[in-house]
Length: 93
Image 1 (cartoon, rainbow, N blue to C red):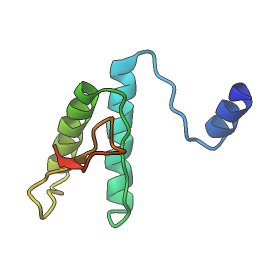
Image 2 (cartoon, rainbow, N blue to C red):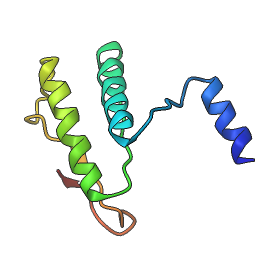
Image 3 (cartoon, rainbow, N blue to C red):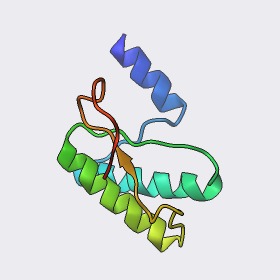
């Protein structure tokens, strides 16, 4: 079933294949920036497995946002939700 599901996501353009994690990270941030420019009013989120990856992606997304002169009214801060989000309140990261 996983193969069929991945195939459906790939056909829909929802999967980007890269050679390594660095390429995947760059592709994700580039797509986030393009989506943000195309639909600035839309909400979006990025999911990461570790806190270190969350911090890295937040920094890269902030950089892309600054590069596009799209600093948000709250000072360019993004909310990060810890892995145990079920019991925790979101924190600013």
